[in-house]
Image (tube, rainbow, N blue to C red):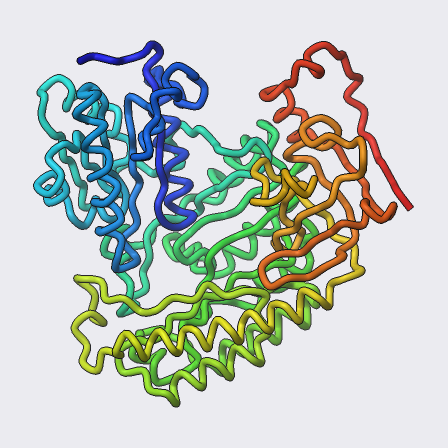
Length: 505
């Protein structure tokens, strides 16, 4: 039965890291260039959505991750749910891309023959062609390239946010960490020329973005392809001077290649935000050596000391793997020791899971799951204590929050809005009586409020509810969001577009 609705619709589901999120924006841009429309914009299509996650779309793209052990289970669980929808709507197309697609290739179609398209990390640009080929031939179209053919940033983009944008400065990675499959799936590092990056930043700012995050598997090794060791520091300084850009971030650096000139550029460029994600992975030098991480804890400690000396208010976050093969209780205690003295604002903590094709998967002395789980719980408890202590130390301080379109889970009930502070902490801000979200303060606007409560994973800034500080700086980004999301009341009004400030004291 043909249940297609005009116009043809799509949805892209993203699994994995920020690089995948950015790739998904490119996939969406390619589909829209072909005339497809995001399913949320076609109510008739969205109304047929099922619990399988199809959202009612004619084309469902799943952009996969391959970092975690359960990635394949998660993908095939999702595909299994979509099979029933496909039987009801046979013209619906399912495409699988990303790292797991690059790794599994034809095996995806062998296990889930109802999938129409499989494409890899190196050929995002062929997605529309593969969809047409599959529909014409009535069979799956699988195409995987071994190396990058088209740099993703040259492709059309459908950005998820009007106020915040990702900009890739490189793809791939030259490191050989024994636990990581990414270099195999993304390839060797390839850097874009500085002029191309700066031009893209200028373009997204012209479109309304006031925040940009520079992306790379190892951003601070940027410049290796054209022999300029100080290229990343120079890029931060140049990007930070672009008119209209208010917040510049980057992720993720590697401790081994992190240079003092980058710290100086961060400290001396007001647009660069006081936040830094610095992956530790382990606090044991012995484990770091087994991981083939080319730094030791002394080097890591020194980086944090230098950052905090130059940027005292910096919030530093990290990644930590628990239960790497051969990790002893002594090794794990050394990790706890580094976490204790590093005072991370937060940590992304993982129990090691073997990835086929990585050296670590075949290492002896794999840590028993129950041991790894117990260590993981101890690490999380320690980090939660530190995060709570540091968050409570911020109570009474003023934060400037870039308002997000997506509320916190309890924002609607508590009359709050949510967003990120300059140091990238999540903040929930109480709204004064009579102030409407989406009207008086919009996604993309900047709100200043005072922190009233610090929790491990967020701050509460309810100063407005106590007749205290609540100031709104309306931005171009907020104007653009409002133009795209007018309320009936706004549609009847003609505003002057003047910035407003609502102090309460």
